[in-house]
Length: 254
Image 1 (spheres, rainbow, N blue to C red):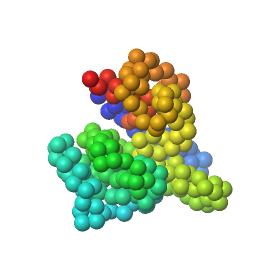
Image 2 (image 1 turned 30 degrees about the vertical axis):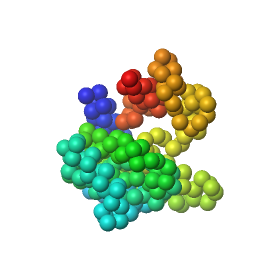
Image 3 (image 1 turned 45 degrees about the vertical axis):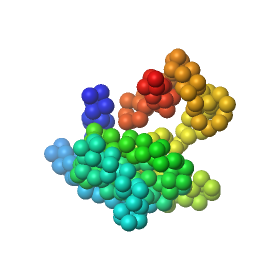
Image 4 (image 1 turned 135 degrees about the vertical axis):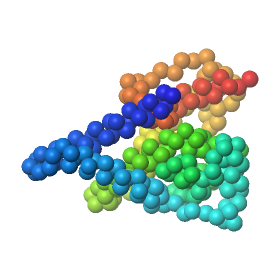
């Protein structure tokens, strides 16, 4: 219920921003009325609804794969969708090397689940299955539809600015900068990846790259404290802070 409340609040904020921008531009040009602006706003939202999935697919360099091309991936998605009482989502593989998985679409019947090449090369079968289960939960609770709806036009503007002004300035970080415009579809914000690595190093005592049982039990006893910025960001995201998520998982371990 709290997640749905936050998402509706996000819609209201984004609607207010969009309406304010259109009214400001119309007033500056001396044209239009309140009703005209309202129609324009709903027109923009309708456009986002129609083109949102296509824009996300293009930006994330997704190739939709058949069961013949990726049988194991399709099998896992089908099994998880059946358990969640969902129509089987469309399955795609993003050509990005950054490890990630994400879900988007307009409705549960229009659901799409994608994984990047980077995560396919990194995770074991069980780990990938757990990640896919997480992504299907976004389809189950329909929050992916809201994020897809709100992302299209801001994403186009971001990518236009990036392509025209910034493309030559990032060298080896080209791909990381590319996905900053679609950070809403990431399990974590790629822009703060190094910060999260430092946070995780606090509990990964032996620096093995994994959190073992003893480290998990130690985290269970700790209090995770967030800064003001992180608390505010949590109001408008479907993903809590990484340490908070791991701490919650520690409570499920016998």
